[in-house]
Amino acid sequence: MAKVIFYEKPGCGGNARQKKTLSDSGHQLEVRDLLSFPWSGAQLLTFLARLPVAEWFNRSAPLVKSGEIVPESLSASKALELLLENHLLIRRPLMQVGDECMVGWDEAKVAAWIGLQGAGVGEGCPKHESAPRCEPPAA
Image 1 (cartoon, rainbow, N blue to C red):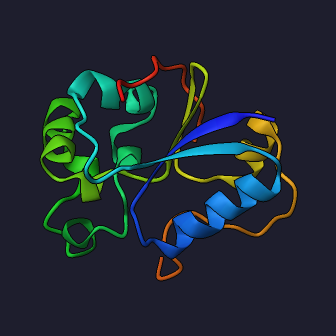
Image 2: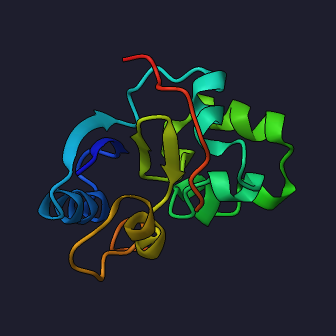
C-alpha cells in the first residue's frame, strides 16, 4: 500500500472521513496541517499547476461562498497570491504519494490512483482532480 502525505484542515469532518477511508484501505498516512504549512508558491503549484485556476479553490471557503472571491475571474498569479495569503482558500485535501499529487477528493480517481476499499466519501466538509506530478514539499 501507499504512504500518503495528506494535507488537511484540522477538524474538518470530510477530511476525517477521507483519512479513515485511506487508512481502512491499508495506506499509511503522514498528516499535515494545510492551514499552517509554510507553503511557497512553487510548492503549491506542484499540486495545482495542471488544473484550471478555478479548481484551485475550496468552494466552501467563506470568501468564495460570499462571492467576494470569484475563482473563475482570477489569473493564475492573482489566484496563487490569494491562496498563499489565506490557506483556507486552498482546495483540499492535497495528497502526495511519491512524486504524484492529487488535489481534492474524487473517490474514483483516488481508487484508480492508489486503490481504495469502501466507498461513499465525498470532497470537503459534509456542510458542502487530477493527479499531476510534483516534487515532494519540504517538511
